[in-house]
Amino acid sequence: MNPKRTMTLNLTDQEMSVLEELSTQKDLSKTALLRQALRLYQMVDSRISRGEKLFFEDSEKQKAELMVL
Amino acid sequence: MREAVHILDCQTGQLAEAEIFDEIGLEHFIETQATWRPLVLEAARGLAANPQQAMLIPRHFHWDWTRKEAELKLLAVKFFGISCAGQLQGIMKIDTVARSCRLPEQQGKPLVYIDYVETAPWNIKLLMEPIGKPQRYRGVGSRLFEAAVLQSEEEGFKGRLGLHSLPGSESFYIKECGMTPVGRDPHKQNLLWCEFTPEQARRYMAGE
Image (spheres, rainbow over the protein chains, first blue to last red):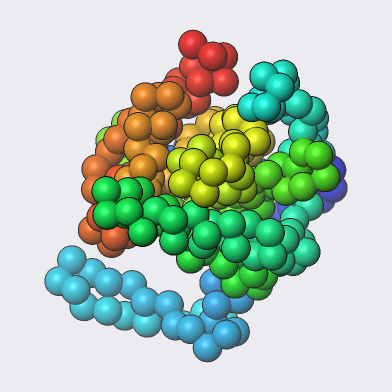
């Protein structure tokens, strides 16, 4: 197991509510969910930095590009 | 992370002390290219020479781990290696965000996805037989698979695991590991998607 460092995170009620909802939905602890979010953000950022694009496709195969800041 | 594990030395029939680790670097990828790939290609040529054995040519004979160097920096990707007798015996890449569960009872939940796993060619009997060389170790793939289950638990995924099985490995994952064959994936060369629930992972790790 790799050593971990602790941090305090301040969230609004709404943010905490979303975090709790997603944690339940994904069967993850809040910490695990936030670690997942960080990994996803880094992966998306890394690929966009390389010039790749991120698209969402709906049920009718319409694609919309997601612009990540 | 570095942990002692055991694999079977096929020559002596005794357990050999090996080490599983996650501090993988470019040097390990280069080692696979320098020491594994020539042997894999030699064995593939041997199999190709015999029409009855051509179907046994491993689908991964062209893999090049050095192409994955950029992924060493990604939090979502993790590599594990297993070494014994001073040599790399197997390597695995897992991903924690690229895929999610497909079984109805756990659909959409996160899992550890085994993206690539490869055992050194001298540990694969099927490859060594055509070139008249002995298989060295058994159990490398199983130790790596166990590491993936443990990583799933470490991530809070409760042992949930998924992979696309190459045709020659389907029986191993379904019969020996107890994974559920969910279905062929048309977006991944029609490979079979196999998945572990937490209960299946628990049973596997308990040896049940």
